[in-house]
Length: 60
Image 1 (cartoon, one colour):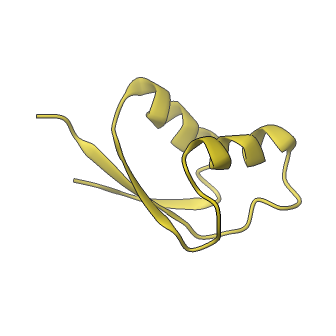
Image 2 (cartoon, one colour):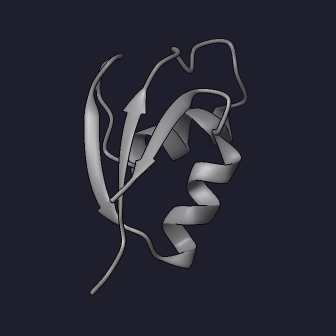
């Protein structure tokens, strides 16, 4: 059974590096305070780590 990551965008990516804004979009966010759910793969874990100051993560 795969672990799931429930990710909530808590802070706007505006004013941060372009690569961090791109990571937020790649995770599936379009607006602030949205929630997305992903399987916890090494790629997703790396993306979460890169923008950890902008998101809140819960593991299922």
